[in-house]
Length: 198
Length: 126
Image (cartoon, each protein chain N blue to C red):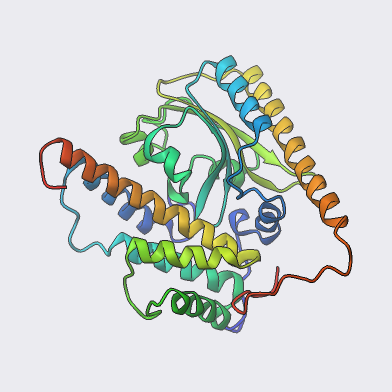
């Protein structure tokens, strides 16, 4: 292959359709969504865990679309580099990822969020679109070791489904709003730096 | 974790920086700076998505828009955040790379601010 051609992504994280879905669904907006917040509030309360996140996994980072119980710099940064992300494992596997004791788990024990921020347990389930793309994870996080029962994972999947229904609803609403714009409306000028869409 | 392309080195550096921020331990002198790696990853992502020539062109255009030298080997976190803002204006994968870059730059800025605050509270120099 010529070096001037784009290199095809070989892992799901770099899947173009998946990344395009994240953009199309406007998931990088900072607007708070009460439905997503309610889902996280219920999840953390029912499972009795301090932190809940709706996290989308980008190419080099994860972004918290909604968050419950986060404090300090993590709340302000609203994401982390991908290397520190537990949720990346959900996207890579396309299935739930559970860590009962992060200090002894092969994939998490060296993670600074474990050694410095005190994360001990994690359960995340896929945020899957109708097209089957896994955009990220709905997860709950604890500061103590914890065992997750199959029923609890099913409950998390229920909340993730609710979150995706809401996200798809938002897309439909935006599409409907866009279609009401008169056809003679001028197109916004394109930035000269903008390459074509995928 | 080492499961994503190029992550093992980057992760090691990220961990090193994180520990040095919070424990006041010196960074390993031979390790390339974190800023350098964040910058390299962002440029690599642009190349992955757009190809070598277009990826380089978009990076250069973003740098020029921020009055920065695109060939600068190590840009500061503030400069990377400014470039991220430029990339986020674009559409498609460029916007995504911008968001990722922004989160990474912001994460390390927050850590630095937290560390300075801790130093200040301990009575050290901020």
